[in-house]
Each structure stands twice: as C-alpha cells, then as structure tokens.
Length: 274
Image 1: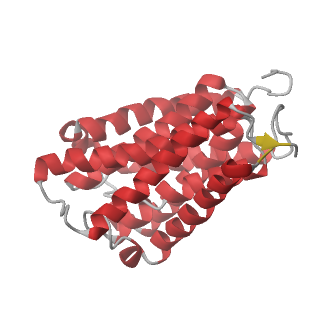
Image 2 (image 1 turned 180 degrees about the vertical axis):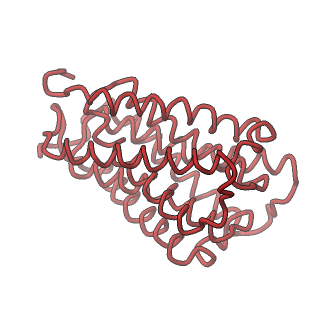
C-alpha cells in the first residue's frame, strides 16, 4: 500500500499502542497459561474460569494491538483504534459502576483505572483528530459474502453485547460457568468490540483492515474455547452434557470461523468502489 495515502499514526498513539502490547502480552498470556503467577497481581479476586477467560480476552486483544503497533499506519489503525476505544470505555465505565470490587489500598486498583482511562482518552482523542482522514487506497465498501458476514457480526455480537450490559444474568444463562453481574458486563466487550470493528469495515475497508480484524476475531473465538478447556482440566466443573455449554462453544467457534474466513478473504478482491 502506498505510504503517501496510508500515513503514519502519531508518535503518541504508536507509543501507547506498544505499551498496550507489552501489558497485554504480560497479562493475557500470564492469565491464560500461568494463572497462579498472575492472580496475586489482579485488582480483584478471580475464580479459575474467569482467570483463564480474561487471559483469552487480553491475548485476543493483543493481536489487534500488535498489528497496529507493527504497522504504525492509518490502515489498520482506522479499525483497531475504534475497537480499543470501545473496549476501554466500557471496561472503565463498569469498573466505576462496580467500584466496590476494587480495594483502594491496593496499588493494582489505581494502576487499573489509570491505564484504562489513559488508553481510552488517547484512543478517543486520536479518533477525533483523524476523523476526516480518507480511506487509504485501494479499498472500498465490502460486497458479497464478505458484506453479509460483517453485517452478521455487527448485529449479532452487538445485540448480544448490549444484552450482557442490560440484563447480564439473563444474557449469560448458557455460559459454562456462572457469571456475576460485574463479570458479565465486563465480558460484553468480547462482543461489542468486534461489532464496532465490523461496522467500521462496512463503511469502508482495505486489505490491511480486513486481515487485522479477521485475525483478531479469530483469536477472540478460539482463545476462550482454549481457556475453557484449560480451566476445566483443573477444576472439572463444566457440564458438557448441557445444551447451553454447546451453544456457548458454537458462538465462539462461529466467531473464530468468520474471523479466519475474513482474514483469508484478503487474498481476493472482496470490496467494490465506495
């Protein structure tokens, strides 16, 4: 892609993204693969399944952050930065809603809020500053099956993410482990974030954008399944005979499949003129 029509992002956005990469690498892989090591550093107590799931969530987010930092250009930042913004905004808001979960005497609680507020503000300011940047070329609106898949992601995951915020107990009935209100609302970002990313692509996309989004969505589909298997191997609490468990698995498998298909689809021309 011609760098003249795909300019570099600011040094501040790039630097903060690399900071996110480092934190997500530490927290994501730590929680997913070495939870006993990471648990003492977390701002609130976590049960085994939540430990692993948060690790999967952060490791999936690592994919998007790394690709944005590695590129350092408007594409794929034009899709990753809105996803960072909605992710950090929702987590920040509901951390304040459930402020009783955080011990003000623990430095981890202060670090949590400082990081989330800072990253959210950074992403929001850059979205405003870059709001008039044109779509890099070659690019355009997705068409055909790609467009249908992006609409499906936007509507299905967006509605479900909002349901987790509004009616967390009802919306999380089929999860393989019981979610309290706090975690159900936090986990809404698993669905709201890719829903917003898919919406951005529907308005216009490039190969870089679609590949980055597809790989991120695939990670957010596969890694929670891995987290479930790792947690259950330790505590043996998943009821595999329940239909709800298989519904949960189907949801994340569908995310992984659509994400992989979108990433692979960049080998072909899958969009038309704007």
